[in-house]
Length: 244
Picture 1 (tube, one colour):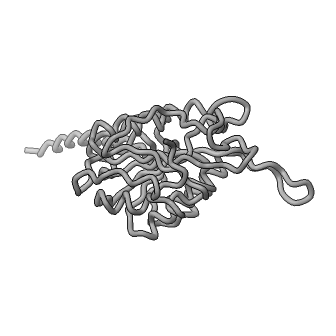
Picture 2 (cartoon, helix red, strand yellow):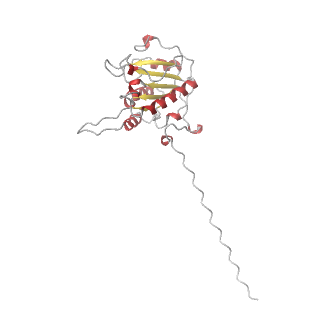
Picture 3 (spheres, rainbow, N blue to C red):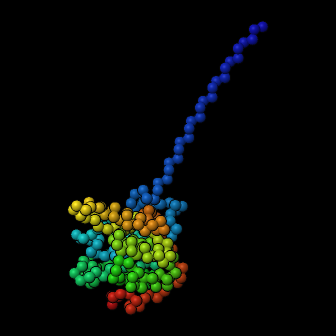
């Protein structure tokens, strides 16, 4: 008997390669105002410093570019901080005579309404750094503040100076990238081209170094109450030029 040749086996169908998972969107690339899922949000902060959000800088001809967006972001931060019982400090710059933020002029007024109380107050300041010759350091210490979010204007001046000192004092510092703003840097003929405000803001934040958290949006910032009971508001003598 002649053996019949074996029927060749049918080759196996190659497995379909798995569809690669869509990478998560980094916080720095999220659209403005987007919320992050809870598992990727930042650890909460117990203090919000709102730097110089005054009428001269967010309304009218002297407003920073895209002022409406800044106002929206800072308003959201303030609302969430209040709801969580966090400390909210509005820093108000006292400009020199004739300046757009000269005290008691329309441009000097704070843009956001203040709800005065044990955990919300206004501190007037004479310099870029909100800690210099003010009661800010004493207020933070009195509340046991450990982590602060800093927002407002101008990015490379008062925002950066205040954030820098907060870092030097040992605070964890968050500067949400869409929570601060500044003006365009004008060109200097023969020396340098103009620099867009958004670039100035980004460089100012990154100049704080790796200890500051500067690549997350305002929507990612969450709040908690400070570690100590609310301290009494500082006396008028501790706050430069306290309004009475």
